Length: 233
Image 1 (cartoon, rainbow, N blue to C red):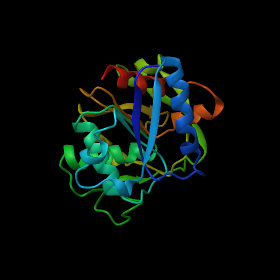
Image 2 (cartoon, rainbow, N blue to C red):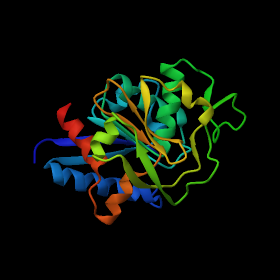
Image 3 (cartoon, rainbow, N blue to C red):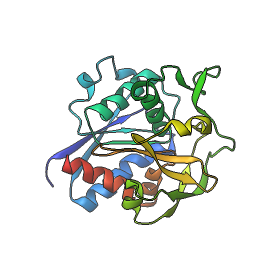
Image 4 (cartoon, rainbow, N blue to C red):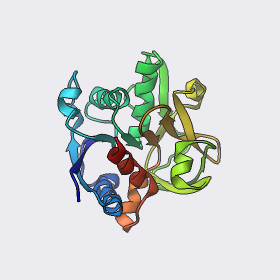
């Protein structure tokens, strides 16, 4: 084993949340596969202040985890922006996917009114809105986009993954995603289920929860790719 890889897990830890149970397991399995030592550190969103570098610069990577709404949405958004601009390898799952999109709309695209309908039901620009069909404890087929990094990671064009969510990218605003934060995967109905940031060392966010494979003792290619990117950084 070489140096310890420190990963900031941005979210509000709850031992009852399945994804929170799974993330350390998934990281350990992938770390063993790569021959690295990993130290995932939980950072509550209330611990992220106006200058996120003060709290996050010591970490090699950032994972924005499920179970939103967060206690401090602004803290989560600041952490994601830090990962995007620093840059640091970034993975966002479920709530992390939702907030990665929201951060990009606000700070990269300049849509300051962009908001999350769960936190702001009366928002003028609900970029993240309630799904037409709940995906709480659901499994679904996902189509990986041609030429996407995600498809390269999986090595296939179609996968099946697990969800636990009620909110996602509002289809009305999906067209505003362009060459920067681009669509990496859709479900069979055409809804966006993963995005990735062009030109970044590693910035991928998924509405589904790949970490759940860790509870079955199974290595997940996306988690392994995330750690491999950290090793290259």
